[in-house]
Length: 564
Image (cartoon, rainbow, N blue to C red):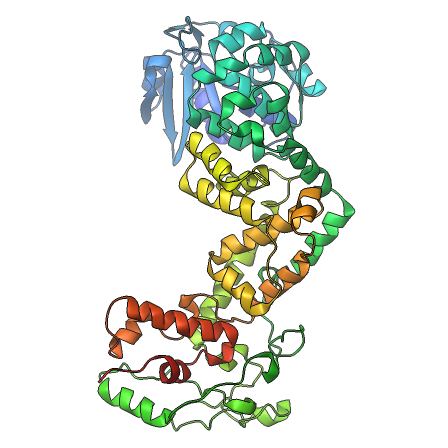
């Protein structure tokens, strides 16, 4: 039996079941590798790998449901319920011929030999409830000393598998460890070996590094001479800026900025405001905040004609009385709801039975209730985890891989878009990472307008979630010299407040926000083709300038003239 030390790790029930079943069949079995490391550190393991003296055929005979995922290398996947666990036979790797994979593997009955082939001491520990912690190469000590150290001779480990070079830096970032001196020097000596590693695997390691809570350790890649072998233009990254980003993330000033952002964000409030719409000055919305140029030509006749021609049911039931010059609202037609007395008088004047109050912003803008409900429901869904929302932009936090485009945006700040795009293309990044990462990195250092209409125009060029990403990337960068130089006059908090107000008030920004769709224009007789798009764009521009114009009656009367 291998030497063991005292340590208690809480194994998941499935892992206990697998180990126990193998032991009852006369084999050794242990949880091994990263799951043991993370458990000792108090981190939640992503996966639980199991190593055993049982040969693959013996593993398959013990369990009813298995998959031969890597049986030539001794790995069998055991299925328990809806979970899958890799169980691998103790093995010794043969000669490595391509700096990545052994030419052959030999099964062994020795746990010591199996652990000896692993990359770093902190990953070369095994555990079972019957044997305790097996730590033959000082992994527990290195965890205490916060060091990444190779098992045995570093030169041997890096000549076997060049990916281990990047993994050393990645583990140092994820765990906030240093790299042991001999291991560090060997990384420098073997940097060129990275040329043998596929770009997809390099992207995986770099992504894990920058998605860690210590993204600033990406600078180690430059310090150790790895940058030229990672990707085209990687050496052009401003690593000093990344360090400045991380340093600013923990300051009281940045904490205050995030607290203010939480107060501003409609995503953090359980209900949308029921008060009056906000005006350009942040106060109540008054008619002078928008252009008063509405002019309808015989609106009742237009509606009657439309309803008559579409008596099958496609009537203008969503028509809301359009505002008139001077701020008045046309008298409601029979069968349609009223917005109130026709003027913006005292609140008490608007509370007649069956009439929505004027401070109902969706009624004021002419939005149908279903659209308002959908907007509120969508924002409340996102609001379920506010901390998760801001976590993606917090460089002190570890984030999931689906947010890596945000971390790449930070990493590439200041790099020209063409070089940033070439860098991610050379790493074979997915389209989301490539397009959104480059776009955010570029726009985060360009000032945004503080004018309500112009900001809506900028918003309309991006999905709402991506535009919010842009604002928060800017906010997270706002204390750095690079941002201050690029956007010296921008008040990002003011822009963020304006954005949140536009969203909360339900003001039209996108074509989907219009009360009319292309399909409805077709039903009205508009010809198919680019003309419909042009009409909708003109309608949207009007509604962006003055949200009160987003009514079917106004938009049809002013922007769609049916040809005879």
